[in-house]
Length: 197
Image (cartoon, helix red, strand yellow):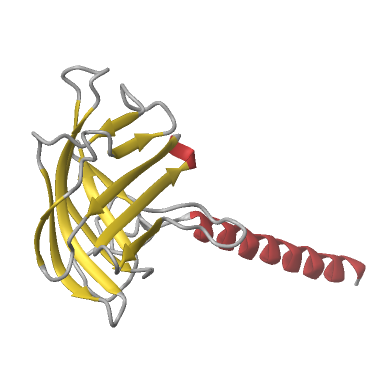
């Protein structure tokens, strides 16, 4: 009788351990998410105009999507201001990929923004930074706009009443300390719920 009870207990324990092992194994299988607007940093967000606070582009051919890890008070990957008194938009997108050792940002500054259309980013006498690398992954830490280089923004949706600015962008950025080194940003897009001042 004791052997029968012992066998039942052992069978239940083995069955329990088998179920636990299967659950652990199944939870470690992950399907890569390739949906746009997912947390996958390898997929550009879709072109939208709903104020979703998305920002993405290709930096020298590599997909770059604004994202920050969780932080107390909330992680802020996209921030900026639209100044109604000067019609100026200043937008900053940040990306931190801790496992890959990447932390960088892209800045966009546009003035006289009053409607949909083509705009040129400000250079501030070639001092306006456009790309900053905080981790040493590029030859220089800061790359700036230049009057002679590409720096285009197309505003595709502009609604101050809804608080939304959306558009596309492309730019070439340089640092005179790194001759011949250019950051080329292409296929840029953003959909921003703006802060208005």
